[in-house]
Each structure stands twice: as C-alpha cells, then as structure tokens.
Length: 259
Image: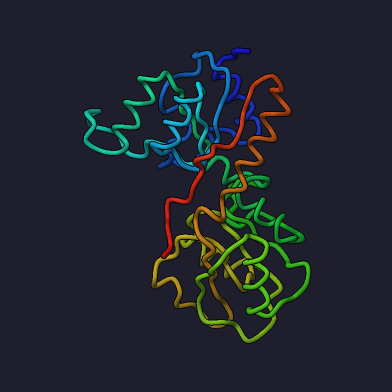
C-alpha cells in the first residue's frame, strides 16, 4: 500500500516534533518531498552509498536516518563528493530521504532517554532543559552505587562494547550520572552543575578528558550511544502504520572501524 511520505513523517514528528531541532540541524526531508507516495522504508543511523544501493536493489522508496544526509548547503551536485553522488543516486532511483536528528535527541523518550532506560537509571530528567520535557541529555541515579571500574564493566555489557575511553577513575562510588547520545562534550559543565559524577557520551576530544576533581567522563562512541533509536522508530512506525513496510537496513553500520 502506498502512502504519502508526509504521513510517515507525521508519525515520527508526533514523537519528536521537527520544530524543536537545533538551529544548525537539517532534520526533515532532504531528498524528495512530503507529497511523494511511498510503499516502504529502510532505517539507518547514517545515509551511506551502501544504504542507497540496498534501497534501490530492493525497491524501497524511502530512507529514514537519524543523521541528515546534507548538513551544509551543497554548491553543486556534480559527483565530486560522496554526498553529491548519494544525492544523484537517490534522485535517479526516486528515493525519498528523511531524517530525525536533534529533534529525536531532545525528547525525553528519545536517544538519551533510551540510554537511561538501558542503564536502569531512576529519577531521570532532562540535563540541559529548554522546558520540562525538551532539551539535550539526561541525568539520573544509578540503580545501585558503583565504583568506576564496575560502571565501566556495566557499560560494556549493556551496550555490547569492546572498549570505553575514559578519564582518570574516581576513587569513590558513583551514584548520579549524566548521559548524552552522540557528541555530548559541550554538556560537561551542565553535568557537573547537575550533581552528576560522570558524563557518558561519545565523540569526546582529547582535552575533554582532563576533568575537575570528583568528576569523570566515559566515551562509549557516537554510533554505540545512538543506535537504539532505530528500534524505537521502527516500533512507532509499525504500530501507527501497520500496512507500511519498515525495517532496519542490513547496511546500518558504524562509520568508525577499529583495528
């Protein structure tokens, strides 16, 4: 059954309104428009050439990603960059591309809230709040106080991690933690002010690992901290649009490789 792409977007934006995205973001439709009729969708964290190829080969006419394909304005579409070539391929194959990025980050049940649920945090609230239910990051209490080494092991088990980058270990038990999916280095001061002893996030630069006494950071990776949002989007779309086929892509892969 075909439906308008706007109907798919409306379901997502009921959960994560597009108008709350950050000013620098580019969530929403980037290729194709809301009036295009679509039959099915692939979900992935990032738009990649392999994702577009998969959609084209399987006759999928909509791609829904967390990260937008286009962040900065394109001056040309002439095949000179990987983004230009993806735009060309999507248009050639009639594929609509839509993203829900910081709007899915800023709602409490969204990216950071999912991290909190996975860790079993209690008394969860928005870390950098714009109002009661909207803002970046979350903060809450661990189900049980843990030493830093215990928390690191817990993170590796819960998120399926092989490594965690972290600052100098705290010597006392950790009770209150802040979380931010993706890149949360800008929230260190907010985390300290909230009473958190740890900020768990991704994409931390080198100098962010020099922390104030009584505080530390743990970097679990950008992809690893956000990937669960795809399961949530799939569940929301499947329940609201039961006749619309939606699945997570076979090519939903971390852009970072480790050797």
